[in-house]
Length: 245
Image (cartoon, rainbow, N blue to C red; front, side, top):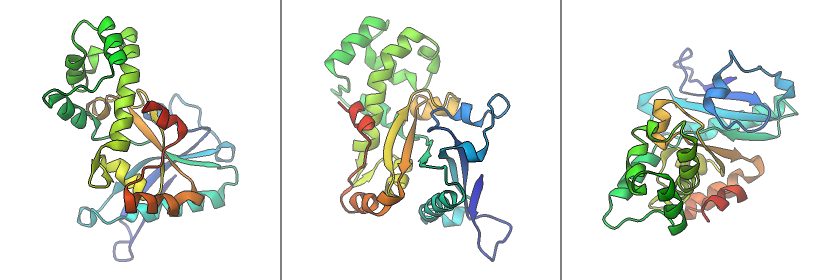
């Protein structure tokens, strides 16, 4: 389904729109979600989850106005009204700033982003220093993607760093990542990081192929919004928190 806000002065042109997939369980891969040729399309009445996978401002002149905040909440309420079976409302979202942040951190003199155990495990598998691999991996996924041994070694430390970036990297009180800031401002919860969820060239360049699910609970909208807006407090699931340990 696609939902949009319109203005009576531009009846044929949306101001902002969002695409929603009705599925079973929270989606963890955007290519699989959109591959309707090879994926069995389910009946809406059998779905238990609404996944928001794309939201776009259609008017450049209105950039920065938080129509998305109002739209998502309206759509959640509309879907809940239309389908009694929908119990979960979540996103499958990009992480556009992760690789840029990682490169900047690695370039800092004396930077050591890896835990001792992570570095030992990585360097026993890799053919070069771990920092060198991390500096190149967002630019050239052939260094590790489809190499199961290297991928397995890289996954845990990279997901920990991504969780740190999403929840701890800030600009003032706001999340540094713009998509994270948008959803947290709306009162969403950081639910889960999805490994190799976007294997497009853009997905690797932005976030080493990772995406994130934000969870929307109608009963928590206002409380989460206030905690984030006033003090920068990020709401996270238990599973997300475990990545930070």
